[in-house]
Length: 116
Ligand code: AMP
Image 1 (tube, rainbow, N blue to C red):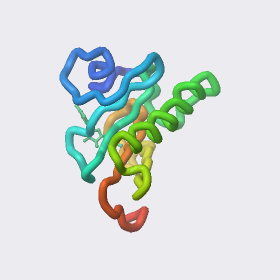
Image 2: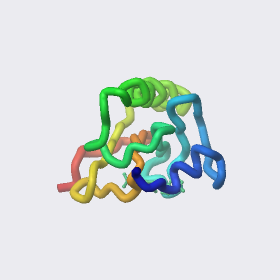
Image 3: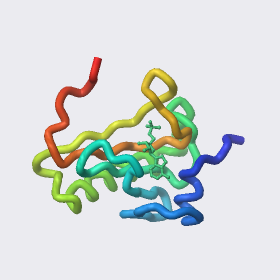
Image 4: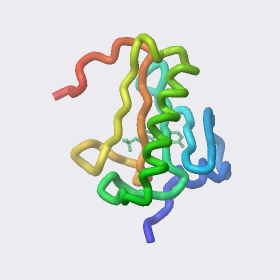
């Protein structure tokens, strides 16, 4: 059984977070340390520790994460100028919270994809 992270508490609204969307499959909330004018995390409500753990049975939630990202980008007014969706897996990508999450970042020119 995977160990819960702070994100499970956010989903259950046990700790404060700026939740911008929630349904039966996913939750989206503003990143506590934004790296761009818009920085929102979109997560499955069910705990999946890393992208290595995704299963076919998770496809509905993973697909919903994409459609919710597009909807939020429109709401944030960044859809036309553009934005980036990022998912980090394990140490080489710098994953620090082991509950998979999609970063939705935008609001200015994001520059090259990778820093090195
Ligand atoms: P990652 O490096 O992909 O694991 O990103 C984890 C992200 O979670 C970082 O951008 C953190 O700023 C963000 N984060 C951690 N704790 C919270 C929290 N309580 N509320 C909102 N965002 C958080």
